Amino acid sequence: MPARDLREWITLLEREGELVRIAAEVDPHLEVTEIVDRTVKAGGPALLFERPKGSDRPLLVNQFGTERRMCLAFGVARLDDVAARLADVLEMQPPEGLAAKVRGLKTLKSIAGSRPRTVRSGACQEIVLRGDEVDLGLLPVQTCWPGDGGPFITLPAVITHDPRTGQRNVGMYRMHVLGPRSTAMHWQIHKDGRADYLMTDGRLEVAVAIGLDPISAYSASAPLPKHIDEFMVAGFLRGEPVEMVKGVSVDVEVPAHAEIVLEGYVERGDLADEGPFGDHTGFYTPVEPFPVFHVTALTMRRDAIYPSIVVGKPVQEDAWLGKATERIFLPAVRMTVPEIVDYDLPVAGAFHNLCIVSIRKAYPGHARKVMHALWGLGMLSLTKGIVVVDEHVDVHDYAEVMFYVGANVDPKRDVELTQGPADHLDHAPTLQFVGGKIGIDATAKSPAEGAREWPPEIEMSDDVRRLVDERWAEYGIGAVPSAPSAPIGQSSRRLLRR
Ligand SMILES: Cc1cc2nc3c(=O)[nH]c(=O)nc-3n(C[C@H](O)[C@H](O)[C@H](O)COP(=O)(O)O)c2cc1C
Ligand SMILES: [Mn+2]
Image 1 (tube, rainbow, N blue to C red):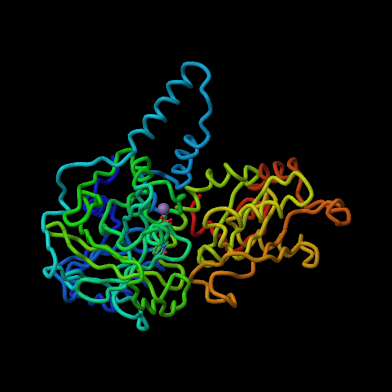
Image 2 (tube, protein in one colour):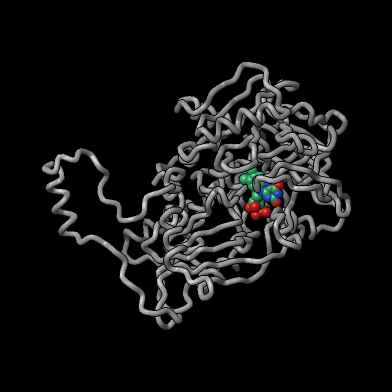
């Protein structure tokens, strides 16, 4: 059974020795950040601050901060197992034989049972504050970094509907608290929430759920196509639908088990200065106008817990939300670009800066084909640098990748420079939103690609390896790790257990 809500998740974390309660009074203004920063970087536990200064509500951070907790959230041993479930659906073929038909039906049923279910009442509305009663100051909202423009709600699931189709969208967009009843809504230019807003004449109703079961919270951060409801995917990944209840002041359904819900609206042309904000890029994102979210109701559980996340110079907690996306979306990426064997978005590259991809190379120019495919694929289109390696290279072993980038590349021949859309937060391009892209083809090249004859790579023969394995004790050298076939070095495997 997946955790039904945030508190079941907290119970699970506690049982697994993955959560520490902090009884001392701690200030959500900067102090929490410094504590979390040290804890995340040390691979430490989730932290439940029971007495955040200035608020009666406990503050939860670092719930996602290790790979183990991310796996616990999904109830899997490895994140690739989540991907495998999704791959089953994506790769469904007309079944042959009874066994395959039964399996197919099961898969179909798990999709059909994934749609959010409307229920009559929800714990998220135990307390209802409307109009002037609303005060965001009740919540222990963090001011994360010294240069931040104020407190920011950092782990919200923002729910909107496409005004033309009624289709729901859920996205994680930080919210700069501007007053007791208003925040900014940081819908970046490429995002679905922004599209719903731009499609609206006048007013767009918005609901924000804070404090969800971990899979629903994760889903809000997942880069799904616009027409796919993130809560449906959450239901599929949980194996149980997300229960929704009518909002008290808006015609938007909200997750019944949420800890806290903010209901309200944005209006076309109603903008305010958002930021600065110490961002996941490792830099402060400067002030920029964003839509104002006016809160018409704040509903919550009687003893609501407020969850938060700190982003900043990597590695931070969001690294693991990102790694989950990298793993979960691999089958979907492969649907379009099947020659991809694996890919890695290094945490240090803040996800959009760098992508290493291994391919089954079949023809001249193939690496460039894959680069351009990725530059045309969903949010991967924002990737600034792509390194392509051959299928035998472990993309998660950065030393091995560097070996091939160094050894296999003629910079004059193997570098693809192009341009395209840039990440909203990328400060390096001359213009905001558009910029250069670099692709490095580190595959072995053929004469058809203008290379001389490619030399064979050095490898010991299997019979000698076996011989040495068998005789090892006889040599009296003691324990030495088995002969490495790849260069040893800093490996992302330390980050991503596999
Ligand atoms: C902790 C965290 C904070 C995020 N903050 C923002 C943000 O402020 N603005 C934004 O546009 N995307 C932000 N994102 C990324 C979006 O959640 C992500 O792109 C998601 O796919 C957006 O949903 P959409 O595809 O439905 O637009 C954040 C992601 C995480 C994990
Ligand atoms: Mn979406």
